[in-house]
Image (cartoon, rainbow, N blue to C red; front, side, top):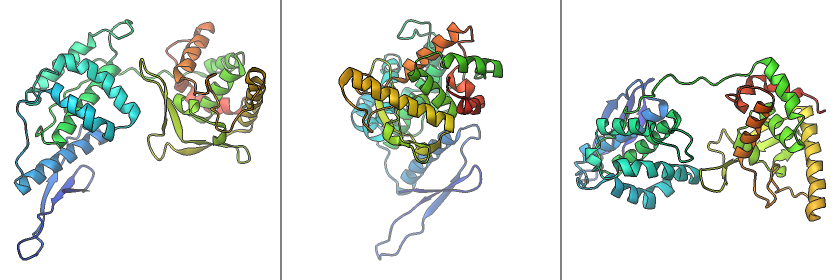
Length: 349
């Protein structure tokens, strides 16, 4: 197995062991230095270096490349969906890739893997820019096209790993069209207006929005919180899961993506008091509707069936609040994060 060692800011040393000779003496390892293109992102560079390590190991070991020149992308995807994707990816990522595959297959499925050249792939991306969304609201966004590119890159990287290809033809094929839209940031006047608007909502929505803005939690992370995650003595919340909703599928709960995502978040006194008030309201509501009490395993923001609420429900409500108050609907919850201290310290009505 080839080993990879980083040398410098953009240089990697690939070392391939050659095993032992017939007398049991270790043969001298073979080395090669590679440098990924400077324009690659860290993730792209990592994948590119792994591919180079596989190819170099084959070269050193004189391993014949098991390339099936007749296999099509559709045939490879069939194998990938059954044997590779479910083992390699998180469940939510795999489902999202399956959605992208439904668009990739009609356009590229009949191509042999070895016939997928850059021109073919770029033509596919351009066609997707004029392809209608599933909900009929215009064409695919540039973000969706970029997502298709990432999925196709992942599929072809797996094909390289398995020996069906000698390189990934999708690398450096995608170029964003037009200028990247900058995320709008709310000014102080807008923030104050929204604070007032949140306090005019039900306590559920007020608590959710203020919690997200006071702590910087992602939408899905807030939906994934359980009462057991709150340490009332230390005034902290343990963030360890999130809720993900994919198109035309039920929401799923999953662990945080990274170890850094699993974290403790500290609460202001005001936010702490608001959560206490929300807990009391939940207790009262459960007693009235089901003659039950709130369990520590319950979600802070739950549906009647006990499942966590869909993050999109809160996004829809936020857009409604913006419209009702004559504010720009280009704003989103994260547009307000530069002002999150204001939300953390704002008193309850």
